[in-house]
Length: 33
Image (tube, rainbow, N blue to C red; front, side):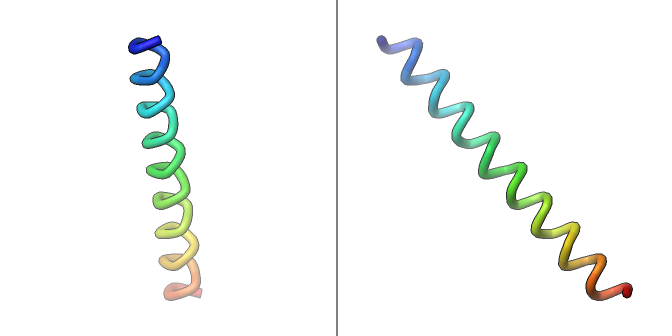
């Protein structure tokens, strides 16, 4: 249970990180284009 929760938190954080990266890329594209 503990390990599973830890894994879910890591997964959740990496998804947030990916979304953030994608957002930043989109903003940069808009600035350039």
